[in-house]
Length: 101
Image (cartoon, rainbow, N blue to C red; front, side, top):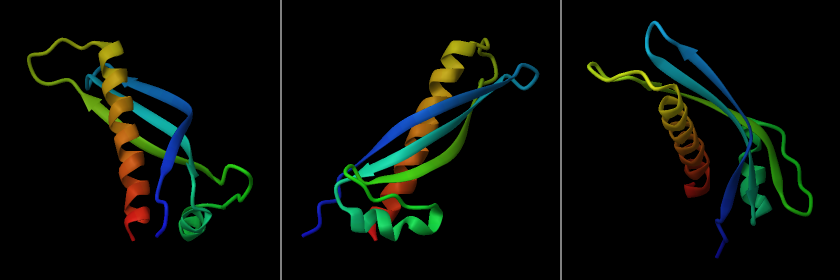
């Protein structure tokens, strides 16, 4: 049985604010650490693969946007938190699809 544990490590986050549209976009750069190097190798079609002591797959990027709902006040800090949470969720979902195969 294959051990399908993995971890996403955030390398860098970038935030872009559009005051006119009342949105905050998070560009999240991350890398994947896994216990099974075969799973990382299977995902290598998305990027180059590095096999070393901690089995790290190269940096990937996801982008997510938080929007202010009509009637709400724009809050930059809250928007950044929501956008980052969405981006992290997208990253985990993207990696999970490969591990489910």
